[in-house]
Image (cartoon, rainbow, N blue to C red; front, side, top):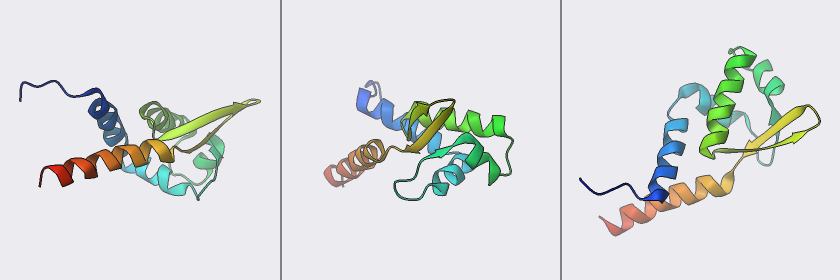
Length: 99
């Protein structure tokens, strides 16, 4: 228990914390495969205020769950599939090694 958390697991922890919120899960489920959405599009279909959606997008982005690109005045978000695959793959590898 006195071992430090490995750096790869710290990244995983941020992703799991980000995904631990129901509103952020709902936002993630809005994305169709390969789709990019901006905060306005997400807020339109959400029960949350635009500022609250922005807050959740920030958490999802900072954790690595979402990637983004600013085009003009809009920031477009999409699912960072590679980060999620890596994280979930690390968990599965750990389970395979320790069961």
